Image 1: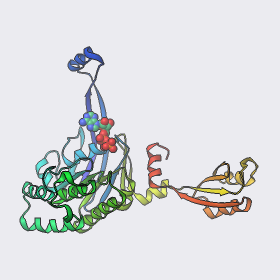
Image 2: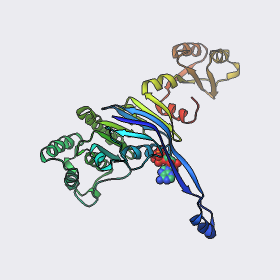
Image 3: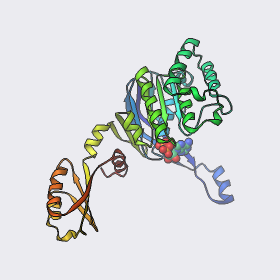
Image 4: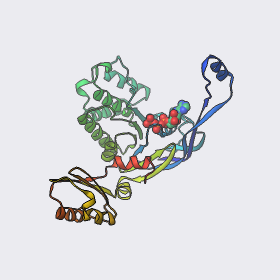
Length: 331
Ligand SMILES: Nc1ncnc2c1ncn2[C@@H]1O[C@H](COP(=O)(O)OP(=O)(O)OP(=O)(O)O)[C@@H](O)[C@H]1O
């Protein structure tokens, strides 16, 4: 369905010199700096997959998406979507894809939502019957009916986002690109938007590429993630595997009745010999350990036998922590 091979995009930026003289020099200068926004990336995405495409700010996510949607042409490498090269067949390609940018809207600001949809129906030449069927489905899944006749400028962010999703799906595209589809939404609306995305994928087998900084989106929607950093691919695989491989670090935090004197605890040095990192502050004890080597019960047994523990909690490493560590090259 989507094949990306050795994809690279460089941006050339004219060198800027400071001051007025500098501005003139910059204008005539042919010196430039080169940013490699995307650097030799390859992957394939099958029909019906939901893939989370993630990375820190400036990692190259939008640039990749722009090449997949045909907005940008690669410096090197190739992209094919449904057998077509998107930047060579922009208009035909547009019929097969839908794009939602969470930060921007493609809705007509002063028109009622319903009129944006009729305009898009004409643009995409969707036959009447199909349009009716699709609108019934989308109104139900995205709960649009309450605000369908309101001008877009009067919609709340959550309503606007649901409107944008519907607008991207009027022509029932085979692929949708969602760039931060839940940004700025409250928890309940986020949940509804995620449910709607899932439903659309289940009903139509739509392939979905999702860019997000909210890893809950990924946890709930996709099993596969691609992580990029400074233009290069760091990871392509399923979420479970990343948790197994990188998520073996766990942590237990205990509160004790008395202030802890770590240097006097033989149990602490015993745990350290077993590979744990033990720290203490007043009556709070923190133990970091590797789940594959030691169980929480073993640790708790050692600690409870020595200290008067009033409370404890076991912290699993979240996917967010893992990704942060991958970005920081710690794993
Ligand atoms: N049109 C452009 N001209 C010059 N440099 C660009 C252009 N577009 C992007 N870049 C640079 O390419 C790099 C990747 O940018 P990109 O927008 O793809 O990142 P991103 O992963 O989408 O980031 P964010 O999460 O902040 O949206 C950045 O260093 C950015 O400054």
